[in-house]
Image (cartoon, rainbow, N blue to C red; front, side, top):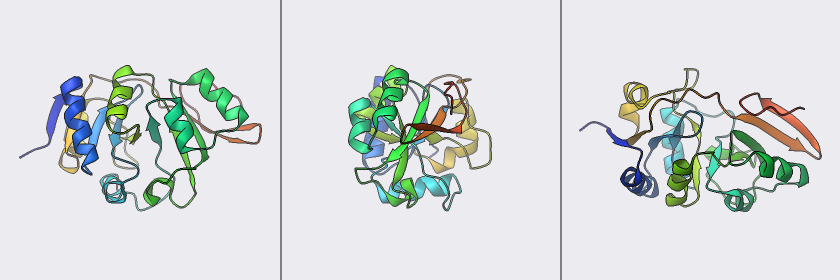
Length: 198
């Protein structure tokens, strides 16, 4: 039996969240690209995600949150980071910050920091909320390959590695901007849709 592809609607969200809560792996549309999702608190699911991406280590896996409160419960946001969050969330800005809640080690890769953001998609936030408020947000692709922009592309390239693909149409947006805030200094780690000065 092959991987299911379902429409990104309320029924799809219900089934996807059930899969995630049972340690499964899904592909889902964010507000930028298709993401590879699992529960970032589940070590076994996280190892499966890293295996699907063919990553044994490296940079931490970003986490999508259903709202500011969930993000703030997960990481410590200083004054400057909070200002950025209030200005750009929901939206394509990922803020790397120190963790204050426990996640699987495969997510933070021993750094005790993680990138968080609140996506600018009502349906995506509904999915994250249904999954418990947090969902991994790494791009749906094998490391080093271009990200998947359609459900069909995800099916062809990752279909045998995941349990469900949610089809939200074609996504042509650039990836999120990634920043780290040290004190009051903003360090841009990846330039993307949101323009933020160092």
